[in-house]
Length: 154
Ligand code: FES
Image (tube, rainbow, N blue to C red):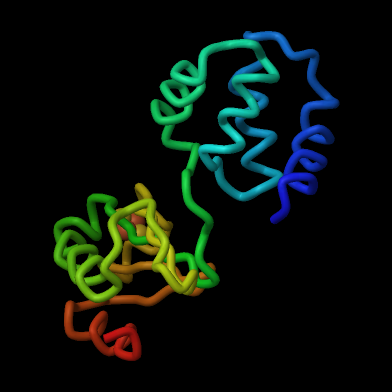
């Protein structure tokens, strides 16, 4: 994205705000809605717009789980860490995904294919342990099934 189109999109987002420091959270939310995530550049622009220190913008953004700092992959994995999944081995499932894709929670693979997020419960407790990939449930997983599912990444 060129600097000018980035600025243009930011200006558009900022145009519905007054530039007051109290607007920080709604501005962060609006910028994330527009770009899908918060980059260093967009957070600096927010600091400028609201005339507050960048450290405050970074501090608030990293405090809240709703904000993300990298683009979502074409295939977004939501791994369940709810109780039912946890007792049936979700931690091993998540570890295996991280291992194979070489990313941590909240990160995206370098090729932009996969991103990983863990969530409290995806509402399929009877199918535990499970994950969702772009909304599609993968049920009753084992580390072996995960290895097969992501085989092409190895
Ligand atoms: S705890 Fe995993 S789907 Fe509910």
